Image (cartoon, rainbow, N blue to C red; front, side, top):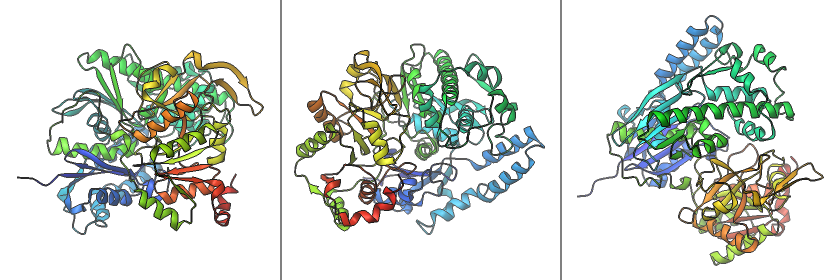
Length: 612
């Protein structure tokens, strides 16, 4: 006798990166960030569009969902507000009142708010369907339950949850349990954001720029940071010296004492970094890496019978730190990182909490190798007929390609000729990394590729090189590691045989290797390993490019304009193609060339082109 499948809907948002995820009998069948539908970067609004798409993808309605799980516990967050005010009173009274009013208006009645919002999808939502998971437990669940491991230590490090900023959990087949935590305001995430703001970037958004800038500097301020800003114990636990920060009292992150310590007021937002800012970035990066490494080494010593570590939280996006942890001989044998490590991944974690913890469902068999994230391809896809219908409505000129071999040959040849190519295939990625389905590609050997990929599509030139997508089996021949990096969360140094003596070009850029478009100032690259089992067509393109050039690597950056989300639909892909200088767009089985497009369409996109 067959039973109906059990669906769990997970929701995150209303503070950062809203998203929805759907489990069917404990398996992720759909997940998407709200920004991909609304086109508002890091959209924090209720994820109506994501929910609607997840339900439609499964062919169900909200009535068919057993539980809706939210990734946060509002009461704990209010407790943190009270504790914060108690610690700083009376200095933060005005900020406390404002925060309390916001919280009372939006969070205290969270269950009622969720029911009201969900009524847009179904008129009658019983209150009993709504569940809440603790913020850091949602993060931990997003890391442990989809991981390849039946038993693991789980480390979550972010800015802040309800109370915690850093937690350690133990995951076993029986349960997932947080065993210790570090509480707000002591936060590595907020410390990193404070430096992000101080050197002129946007906190809670531009931390990746600080991480990239660090490669150009020297950690000349690291001892100053250790002596004055943070006290770290042998096990990696820490406390910030709050005399230097203002994020408990108001929205600013640093104060005059901090500025005096480092010799200047904060840099103006958007200003060009000098060597000083590069050295500051390198310094805080080194401090953060050292602290996290100390944590993981202490945990590996404390739990010698658990060889597996799972990571989540915003600091799990820190690739240099991840790489040191993953290759540390004194640490864990195996490391797995949730690819949507920020709050968007909390939607997956909340759904898993409902399935395993609330409903008591057992952990499935795990082989220690295969994860349950489906290589990150959890979003919308489009049939070739849908693509052609959309392109026809847009009056696009495209060439339908009959065979995959022909499609790959044309694309590989264009890339080898120096063309910048938009590549739109299969299901959209969940998370912020372009993993080969919504991506812009270029030849990493070409010194002009990095500049072209930036200027042609984003009308700006980044200090960070593009990521390197490489056929998995070729990894060890090109880089000083053979670790897989399927979610682009590790960096690795190039092998010496691929490096060159530094050569400065007339535009000031420096050629450091045979692959200048993906080689950073420290001779590392952001790595994305591609396997045929997870993305057959993209892997085949890499192999075709290798046949032409001897190089199984392509430079990779998201199919997006600067400051905008990755494209989701064929229409958005064509709009991006026409409003930038992309040379070519490959969208499912169709190829579009810029020079073949109808000139009458160009004025519609001219305002975008003029933004250069």
